[in-house]
Length: 463
Image 1 (cartoon, one colour):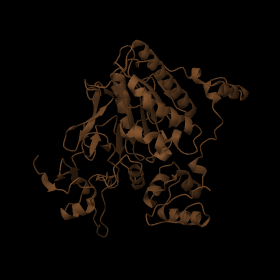
Image 2: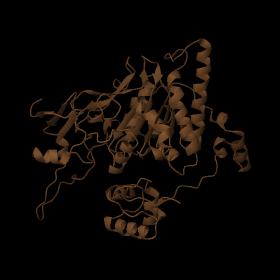
Image 3: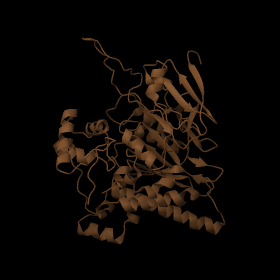
Image 4: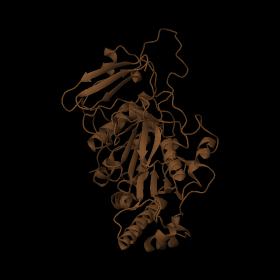
């Protein structure tokens, strides 16, 4: 490619495990750090390429053809920085297995659009989907009417997962009677997926159905795949202890399809600590703003109006793919600007036909105990069987200190990441000085731990 500088580096045995991207860009005299791409090569080589502009800046719209599952059970979600396709496997025809998948990313990184692409791909490919959208249905609203089952509450999600586990058990028994040891696509059962968006809401500490939710997802990941029942979760949190416990999901996810979108520094530490990323693995940071250069502006110099506009949505690493340290990006999914209603571009991708599969009868998976509790509470449908759950606090009526404690995970956040989380929770804007004052007060009352050398702001552990 013209105007691209390429450097091939000899590396120590085992490759480069840690490098300073900022220092590398300074050495190459490149102000826009996103133009420099580092990739670990095979053997004892690494490649550094300097592009005239970030090659992932301009992505085309995703197409129906991209999202049709090929003979190898893969769909195309986007491309790597060098133009090669980014593929995601939904089915392994060699083993007959459905997949286990996870999508991680911080707020605004592009998770919802990626989940939309997976949902469209499943519908176009004849895959039955049972979806839980735990942001009250707001994350992927266009999926309504285009999946076999769609639920929006934690209790309904538990009922849906119970139904999926029951279906996996039915298939296991039926295939044993047939003398079949594996799944054959479409004979007699369709490939089926449970997809849980905003899964951290179901599985985080203190969630009312955390233990059962983790157990059901683990069961699907362990036994469902061999009978054509897969599970995919999408979550903002990266710490597996906030997703039902590291022992529950670590092994399952490491062998599945794991995608990491733009992350916070705390999230990266957590993913490394939980074994999803090898310690010291060289992943180039994904910036919030592509094309941004660090420079001092002169007095009265007016910066561009879009200087701080986030434009890196969809940039990612496919951690369990063949190029785990190579940056990629999804094709554009849906309209660029927010829509006042359902996105017409996404609806056009789904198409007008009915989704494959039948809706799970949630009522059939309400336990006798839950049914009795619902009747005593005066309920008449399956949602009444849920244990009473306090409504979520409203950030617009909470103090800054309350909001800090509400958004802060057990593993803590850096000051910058905590400020970002606070200003994304829907409440009044919080300035850095206000944040520091409240953090100091919370430490004084013992609700936040004293800082250590890492500088993370961490809640006090309960006794």
